Length: 434
Image (tube, rainbow, N blue to C red; front, side, top):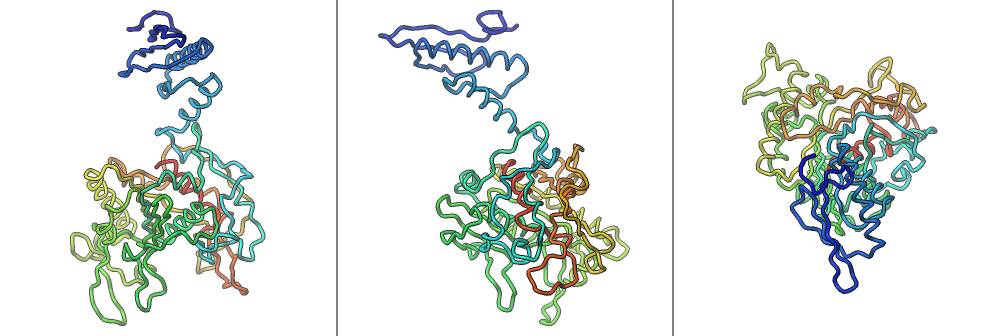
């Protein structure tokens, strides 16, 4: 065994001297490999406890545990608990690999009370829905523990910081979930609307603004959402008031990001469900790359390839920005799964299951099933917020045929989720990674 004062396992790497100063013993500890001298005032009884704790530490280090540090004079039980918590909440955890477990403490807020932040179309507690067992589960990663996720803990961690969600309606669901969690689902008049700081104001004739931003004054925490279904820059091609066509630049990030990026401390991006011909034709989007229209014979005319180019482009653009602003954290959230059966949203597709975890409760694979997103962030400083396989197990959590309207529309929503619900777990995974 290299170095140390004695060559015995339990006391190697430890030298201590006892100096009597008046009647109070002073312990001077020199731990090999530590650049500092730690001094404690201790009684003989404390010395016995201290020695026992240090010996425990040396045993753990010998077994390959590099996460423990000596922080004071805890007894064996408290040191063991502290060490265990610190060991399990670690940077190497694959949070997407684990299982769903029942938890009577869930949901994290009331779907009946969080009316200030929840859209009516997603607040299933205010609908005609009869089954709510989907609310009473939490995600447990294998081999590690999730930090305690509460509104106060989130606001404390995000003190003087800004969290931004940029993406489609699923991103908006995640934003509303976070607002409900941060406020405990309670009416919160103290929370300030600061959308004007980010240009998020309703334009004349618009149904809604392009996003929302709210600030919690007590902690100076801002949470915002900006709607960008493709994360790409949209450039008007004509000025006719009736129908405006847009160049959708696959290799340029949405203008909002270029303008406000440095205002954010944590950024969560998502896209996926608008990359189909129906959405492109309805929104009058035309594909552009390198500043030029994408021809019908081009490989990029395939919308899957077009989406992949956008994912790679924005991941590499964000990586270049992170080199100048390394304190910022950027995550690309993987796609939220659809669960339509026997058709699509407009052809009679349904998702009527209301039994939790009827298709299994566990994710065992190491890699994401959203291959495009995982490939896009590889080799960059952008992290993956992998929710796809986890959410795929929860088909009973969709809005389905529930509606706050008296008469059903006849459509089933097997894309969006009830809130409280599965997007709360996405935010729990996010909290664990920031």
